[in-house]
Structure formats: C-alpha cells, structure tokens
Image 1: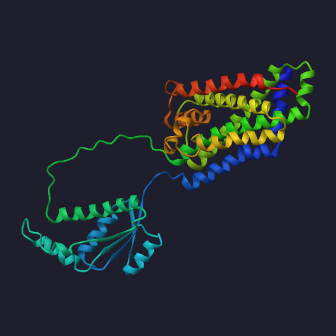
Image 2: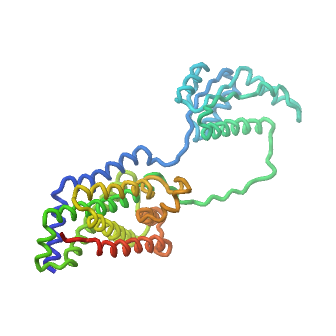
Image 3: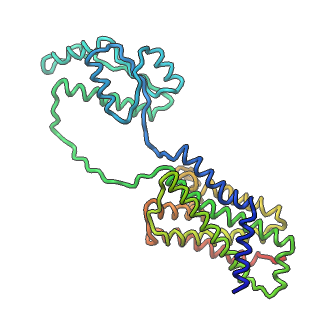
Length: 373
C-alpha cells in the first residue's frame, strides 16, 4: 500500500514539474477553448445588417421605417445616397439595401383612397431591395422580413381582418450555443491527449532509460505500478476537467445540468480506455522518438473526427458509421449529454457500453504487447 501511495505521489510530482505537461495538458486546451468560445460561442443567433435609403421622405415612408425598426432581427442605418449603400453591399459591409423610392407616399395615399377592390396606383407603391446573391440564405431571410413589413402596412391600409387564426404553442427547448458544444469536447480531448499520448511517451522513455527494468527487479508488483499510474492520471484528469468546467462557467456561463457522479464515471471510463491504448502504443514503439509520432498519428485524426469541435452529423455520410465507433466520439457525446441535457445512465448506456468494450479490448491487447525491457 505504501509503494502504491509513493508511486502515485511520485507520478503527480513528475506532472507538476514538467512544464510541457502543464502547458499542453491544461493551459493549451483552455486557451483554445477561450479563443474558439470568444469567436464562435455566441451560438446561431441571426441578425441582418441593412442600409435604408428614403428617397420619398413622406409620412408613409416613415411608417415603413418605424415598422421595420420594431423588428429585432434587422438593424439598419438610414443613408441619403443609394450609390453609397450599394457600394457597402458590394463590399460585404451590408446584407441588404432597402430603397423607398420617390412617390411612394402618394402611391400609398392613392391606395388608401381607392374604392374597395380597386388597385389604385399600385405600380408605384413598391419597396426596392438589393441583396447579395452569394449569400442566399441570409438574403432570403432579409427579403422575407422586408416583405412582411410591406404586407403588414398593406393590411392596415385595407383594414384587413384575419378570419382564420393560428394557435401557436411554444415549447421551451434546450437552447445551446457553440460554447456548450465545445466545453465537453475539450474535456474529452484532454482526457484522450493526456492518457494516449502521455502514457505512450512516458512508458517508452522509462523503458529506454532502464527505469522499468529496475522496477521489475524489485519487489514491486506490476499491478501496484499500473494502479499508481491509473490513480495519478485520474487525479490529473479530474483537475483538468474541473479547471475547464470552471473556466467555461466563469467566462461563458456553461453549467453541468446532469449528474456529477455520472460525469465522473465517464471521465474514469475515458481515462482507462485511452490509457490502455497508450500502453499498446508504448508496447509497439521501440523508442520514445517513435512513440510520439505513432500516438500523434492516432490521436490527431480522432481529435477532428470524434465530434470535439464539430457535430458528427455535419461530416460526410460515408464517414459517419466509422466515426460512431470511435471511443472519443462516445466520450464527447456522453459528456455533452450530461452537461447540456442532463441525461442519465438509462440514456447513455450505449456510450458506456462502447467505451467499456474499447477499454476491455485495449487492456487485453496491452497486457500481451507490454514489455518491461
């Protein structure tokens, strides 16, 4: 028991004295998370930036401007020159240019005074909209907003009464921003990197320096050595996860909506799984110099394919069945479901079963491939 405690403390001291481990295991993921969260963490909120040119300057044109101002989805500046507004649209500074032409007010007055069923001088009661053809999604949304304002004013002019109504019932769904997606992914990435890359490099280095051989010649049991490694890395992963969650909470307001115990369970499962894979790499690598590239060759694609930074559903359909078998995919999914949705083990048992399967297979392979010398 004493050997186990001393080995665990020794491993933790090695972590604390290695500046590279501290930077790449804790500081780098936090810097990456804060950077991505600051640029992309605002989520999918949509707003339109438009320029409005009022060539008519009448009460009717002001009514249109006031109605458009009441919509939060669009922000606009009133410009005096149409060429200036179009130039801003071409440069990408604006997404729409709305022009209220001359005689708009008189056309509206004609419509207002026309007998029921008459169209009056409807040809001149038009709002002109210029949009960016290269950004059709935003442009179509802008055109819809402008059309809705015109439709609203038209109904007021003809005193339109809606006979058929729509009974809309809103249901409050989970509103997630990109940072809510990113934080659990960063925790999963740190667990993978610390254990897969860290174990492979460290064990290979210890073997080359003869440290493992000297340990084998003592009364130290292999189970004690491995248990101390696991405990030290669990402590390190726990500290990493807490720091990331704390930074996410303080900077971006992210929260853990589910069970902390379940979160810890998946941190342990992920740690054991990637540690076992790291031991396999350490067994296959002949030198520490070859362990690093092998670990990087495995972890680098996993980092980008495993749903750490981007949703799996956005990947090519051909890749998705393969990606869904990766351990980091299920680790990041489970952490995300616990933190954001508050899912329990009844929902996440497939992720736990797949991670457990990976851990068991990797452990068996590692036990055959591990070499003391």
